[in-house]
Length: 229
Image (cartoon, rainbow, N blue to C red; front, side, top):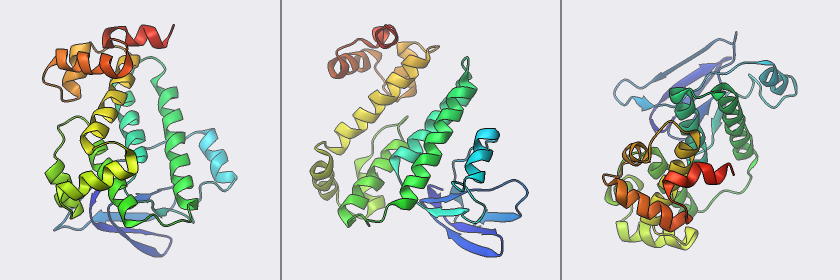
């Protein structure tokens, strides 16, 4: 869940669902979940099955006894979800294999987050939440004031903390993740440079191309052939 509030019930227990909550729902295990009527929620979900996942359950990596996780708003998790959705939407050859691999990345992110013992500082949490909000809006335009308002800080404070922890301004980071996604879309094929630029919120294809080449040294039209040389 990335926004809103609700409840999740399974095996006689009830949890409060909030941004950063992750639920695992197992076949044959009774459960109930719903958003609060007056608040609602925003969710990303994926269903999966197969022998490999059954093995993860048998080995104890996944268990109905551990169905609820508070992992926080992590941009890496949202990026994995976004890549799964992109693969399923485009349905390129062998997309099922690619999606399965990305779901395993999601599971690894979940288990790694659960095992982390060190509580991040307030500033670190601020940066991670800002990254998450930018990742969530990767196909749109950056709204620094809107992000700062959601995080309860000024835009100047957000810029200061973000640059301290990442060596980039929020805008530079936003362009960085957009170009990373552009590489993924170009490698998948099927979309022209103009379509990739439009999907990622660049109004000017030529500005996108100049920016891409400036950051990578390769024109976007040549990126796929460069990667697979």
